Length: 151
Length: 151
DNA sequence: CTGCAATAGTTGTGCATACAACTATTTCAA
DNA sequence: TTGAAATAGTTGTATGCACAACTATTGCAG
Image (tube, rainbow over all chains, first blue to last red; front, side, top):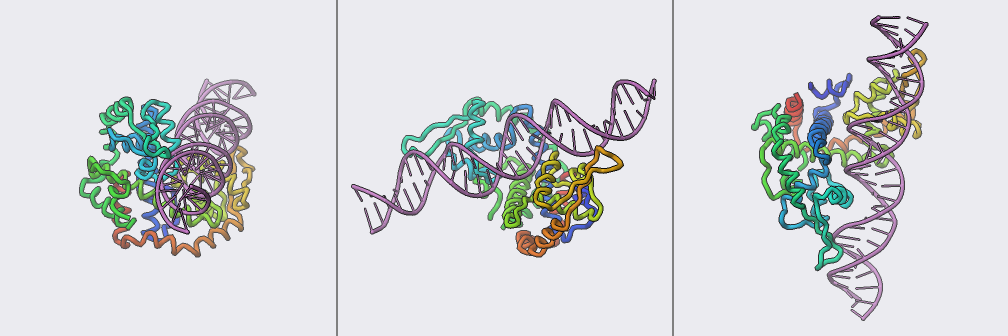
């Protein structure tokens, strides 16, 4: 891996450091996503599905209504419905119609879903290796810059 | 906008600064992508299509074979074929079968495509505004950190 | 030469996203 | 009390990506 210009074989220089940063963030995001997708592939879940499972573990043993799953997702999305349905078919989550408010669908991670996350956690080291290019202090600074950018 | 923990309503702290940085990069990328998609929508092109057009302008007036478009894309993808076909239907690019190597398809941006890019460039300020949260020095540091992370 | 490997691109399937239109349920104000 | 607005979720369509299987063409070793 090399600088972002080399990566995307851009002969012309970027117009500004800001523009370059925007492309760099998106390119690095795609790079991370693909590493993660490959890692999860052996467990037959996608990064999106994995993300939903982690969100549900965060609230376990309390269920989360669908809307609360959506607003916690990294990729602000619409379709939690279809993602959750995929996970339900694999037995990783349960759907329950809420008694007190019948518009609402509560989603709960199952034991099988929790077991999957545990298994994946145990191999997390190889994933963390991909982030080893920067020090902890640099990661801290990176987080500060990204948070500031969005503010 | 606020820190990444608040954004995704995560009650539990991240396990490490590195893990947090990974999520932060992907979340910020998604944020940027959505702003960009909204901006381009009035011109009826997607960010991916826009990216391909810029790549072709970079080599104009020389065409690029399809494979060279692919390897310059930010999102390392397969499907330049289908993206280019969408652009061709809108009249923004031309496809030409290469005489000397008949496996090869040369792609060339049209005048209409160049005009579209010029028009979009002229409204680029609103896009740059989204990056104004950080200074130029911070953008430089951000680029350094991202390049280092991938190395 | 001949046929196998490498190259260039195309296409099918599954997954995911954005957006918009839709149903069902609940709330609340006139 | 009733009907419009708000809330919660579902579904259809277009777009795009990853992967794998496929066609067509070219190059090269024997």
